[in-house]
Length: 315
Ligand code: GTP
Ligand code: MG
Image (cartoon, rainbow, N blue to C red):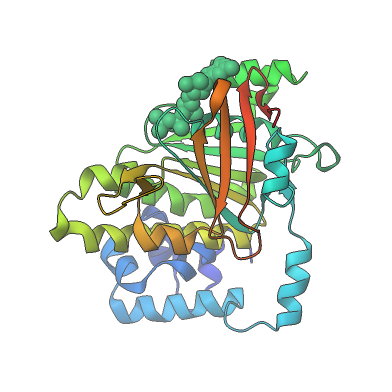
């Protein structure tokens, strides 16, 4: 189905299509993965009509049942983007996977943004050179995207820095609901702009800032979950990679080991396919550990942040 062909959905006339589009629901993909209640609230379309539209959208996409064989075939299209560090790539089973969400977890200054910026450059390389021959979207919630740094990384890798910067699309998310709207727009934007990597840096910052206190925790987790769900669907719909960053919070019940744990609780843990825990090592190195991956062994490796972005560090 064409992306902006909402009108081809049964029961969607031009007026309804306009309402959906103004709410950021511009594709059948976006409609198929958004909870009907949310669509009704955002568009003002009656709930029963919304249910019909959603079911038409899902039918169109064929998102009901597929055989395991189909899934196996789809997994064969999975690609991996190099991080720039062989060690880190190996740890990740070859690089950052498409059709998956990778979470970079760690305290401030550990290198989550640096890895993300490097990936925005690497993704543009050809597949033979470790990239995905695609462009990048960077959803910046904290205003930490630094174009000069990307310029430096591109130059150090022998690329045209201006061209590299031109292939990275930035969106500044001002609060969690704006972030959610941007996520919905990605269903239209990514296929139209050959986007193969979406970074959300940080996934959880706004949520933590806006929903303070125990009484707001369940609403926060629900909203967070819905956004993560959409991002997951995005990775599958367009065979692209999503990388989200996450902070750590002190765990007051830890008696030994690292007293920090990833923020976002079970919702983050379940949504992310690969969780990479980062911490500082000696001599300016960084240590990355894989935690709770379905198919990667729990192991760790060392890398460095350099002018080229991310590189190996001696063991
Ligand atoms: P928060 O967003 O605050 O949670 O931290 P973060 O994990 O995103 O940290 P970030 O990626 O910003 O890492 C910052 C660290 O990267 C700095 O402390 C430096 O060690 C390193 N770094 C940043 N810029 C450069 C650079 O241009 N060259 C080199 N070699 N290292 C850099
Ligand atoms: Mg950062």
